[in-house]
Length: 187
Ligand code: AMP
Image 1 (cartoon, rainbow, N blue to C red):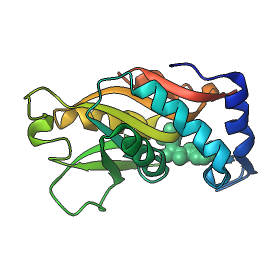
Image 2 (image 1 turned 90 degrees about the horizontal axis):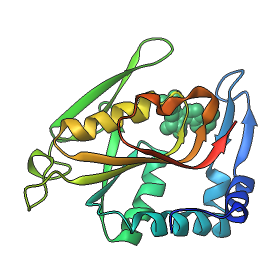
Image 3 (image 1 turned 90 degrees about the vertical axis):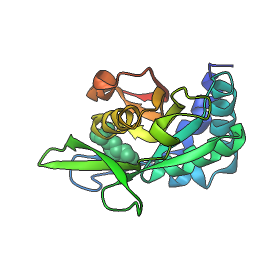
């Protein structure tokens, strides 16, 4: 089942807390800590994602530092898949591959281990590992675009980028080559 009912969407949406002016004036922060602590909302979300992605032929789930780790690792376990961390620069201990992205001022970088999806990003069959990328929220899309590029850079294939929420007015999905799926759309 790929779609989610309006009722289930509302359960998830109602569990997310809005914090005005955090971390700086003008930003409406979408606080998912209240979604995580709400057993019904978390189960509703994860059951929807499990149903959607069990129809895909995935090899790995990759989560973006740090909230993508939570949803990604629950989903990976539900689907019987391995989980890969896409981390901010300097956190991973082994040989890494990095991808830069622009911020309002300057740039940032995300990294993965070079062998995170197998040697040359390939499964034992020799085909590129099929990877679902996940994060809590897509805003400008800089982080997710870099993460998706990074998956492809190490030889795997980002087959879809999935978000709990998308800030539609920022059109952050525009530079992501893979299909994008967001559970909730915020105007
Ligand atoms: P971006 O690269 O602009 O798409 O930013 C996405 C990352 O920043 C995600 O990892 C989000 O967790 C975080 N983020 C950006 N904007 C918000 C927001 N309004 N509320 C909560 N998290 C946000």
